[in-house]
Length: 392
Image 1 (tube, helix red, strand yellow):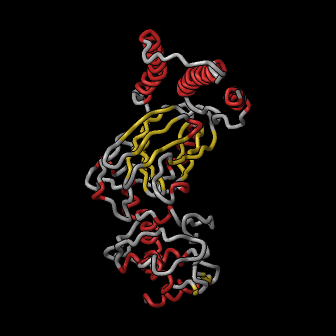
Image 2 (cartoon, helix red, strand yellow):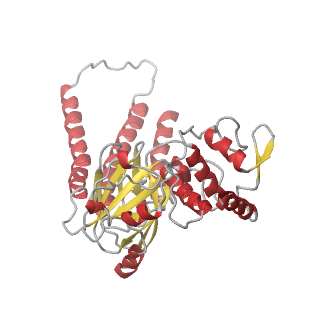
Image 3 (spheres, one colour):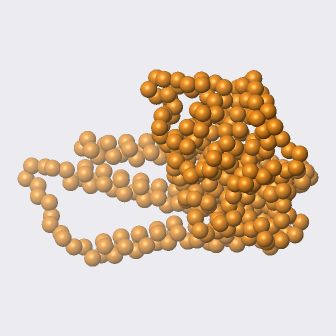
């Protein structure tokens, strides 16, 4: 009897929790109301089955509870009951799957006038690319990935020269204009997910997936990775800013093209510098590009936010404390050891998560210069002056 009462209480509590819970879906900000409708159908069907089956079990437990002198009837088969159960289950599965199949078919079939946005996932950051004036994206391939070309755009494809590269974790989109999203991953499985858009899709290494949506409400929305992609998964975030067409075009015009990005970023492997450019400034630019292409910014922020690893803001010139209680000043030698052999000594408060990467001496120097440029006040200035003096 107590078990039957407990089952009934669980059913009632579950139904009440669904209606009274504060954790509802975020307000819809795109055209995909069908996603919400499909979810509602799923909840209704599974909810009805949940209530009926559990109340039936509670009734059976009560009705056929143990009684002195009573014996259970032995009935190994009941073809009629099995037929009803099979038919009912089949109809329920069809009702669950059919709406989703129709919605998904529409979800991956964008309208002809949709603008194109490419999203590139990498542990643990996002990259974005828009077609240029030509209206077509240039081809891309992993073999073209370099610090100066983190998205792997084909430098020999003339269609890609005017592609607009968004180097950062924020992308803008126009209001009430359909967007076709092309998705690819540079390393492992990711998932591009913006909850208010009800839009998400897996990013599978070696292939390009796609979907489309129309933003219907201006605002700033968070981008999440919805696939466990490593220790920094929780920190793989970005933002989509939805604004009117004029504001979007103004923002887009401020973004560099692929050709301009390649022209402004010196090659790390050769150490080449534009004529007249100070050596230290060149190294900082190289380090910035390396931090993006190698995924360093996915773990180390530049704004003081502590993530998977310590923030690089104010790091240079400070005192680093290790897990064994020892400490050392963060200078060039300190950073070189941490970059080339990250497992040799653990920084207090952080785990042994950083992989050992194959970096040339020039690349290590560039990363150190970039960290130094964002170091503690005074320390970076003195170190930068020393580097420029040494360069002369």
